[in-house]
Image (tube, rainbow, N blue to C red; front, side, top):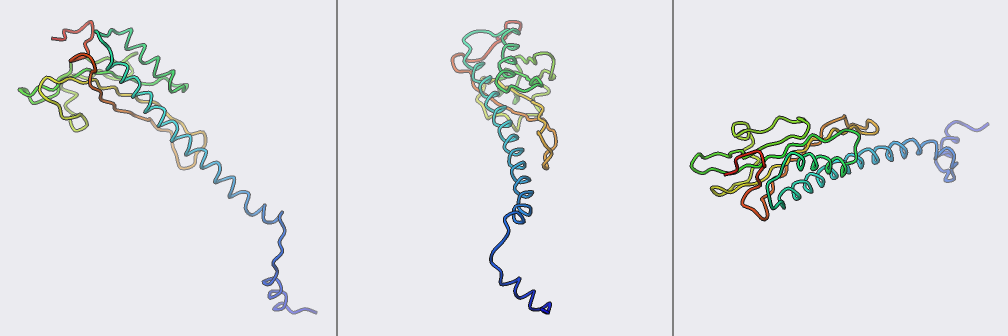
Length: 186
């Protein structure tokens, strides 16, 4: 009869294994890691897509060579929705603003939110965003594009549903400011 001590020493010296046992031990960890990488990659890809779409919309608006209208802004939301390709529509707000040195504040020229998805900015409400806006010279203007897109991860691996937000400021390329046809843009 073999003693328990001998059996344990022989087991410790064994170098051959059983692939089925190893697979059963390792496979759940590999599947868990693969699913986790998939979820985090999907979140990263969604954030990146929303960011690129917001920059694209901001660039399209900054290149306008005339006044924009509500149909144009609605088209920008359609462009955003097409670029992000999610079931939920993006919440978009486009604001044209300028810096007034005599008043020491940012002043809203016009603000629109297609479908009323976000509250339009005013000179009073843009003051809360001053720390996020660039330093500008007196009379300089810029266009602010804010986009919010709901994101739900395909599986729960430490990620909860959240809203991906982008805040993009662009300077008009060809005109001193981007005007809206319904606003006095003096």
